[in-house]
Image 1: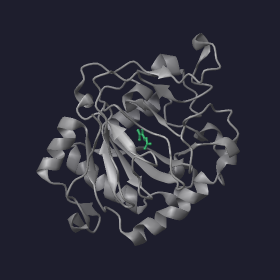
Image 2: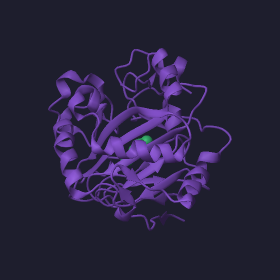
Image 3: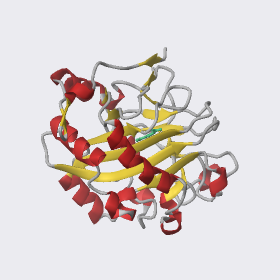
Image 4: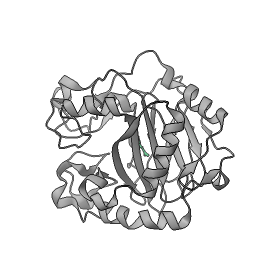
Length: 284
Ligand SMILES: O=C(O)CCC(=O)C(=O)O
């Protein structure tokens, strides 16, 4: 059975740059691997994020981004006008003026409540599903399946809704508790159906996919503009296509232990799709 989740959090939890988590929320995150926090950013704070998002998603920065401007539901060689699930990696790296923005500052405070460790932003990403793109699906995966092996794996990934997201426009879905599975599931490069299965590789498309198991029970996470979802590195998740006439827009930031980030960088891994790494060699 598929369900929809929501909770009682709200703007009353904000004080300056802090958003107070309740002990039961921290417990839910630890046990089930995810959490929703409502109304984390005010409308005026959201208005300070919007123009940056539009600048990247419209492709204005694409000439210097290489594979960091791509479609996460299609191969890299897809022409921009045919994009469905538009992905712009590392916006603050390309535009350092965007760094230290309000979403970054508040999520650091929340990450510090979730993990008793020194953490920092590992990467950021803007994602947008174009209207009426039924195939703008983010294939089901565990984030760790995309990343190199490190001593410590913990990650808190925050997704800020820039507009209301629901089942119809392709909000996030996940399998609560799948973060506790003993083994990471097998991840394979996405098969677009027109390639030799032995030749599918990460130079053609960044996207990885895991098989859905019959017992998997998806929970959908609808969120309103200014609200966020948080998920950990092992939870099985993805998102569906956009069946509406509106965009779905998301700003993602992932926090990891500063030592883990140092380890990744020493391998040449920055979460840029342009990283010159041997994907088969370093990835889980
Ligand atoms: O928001 C989405 O559609 C998917 C995002 C995702 O998979 C992630 O942040 O790991």
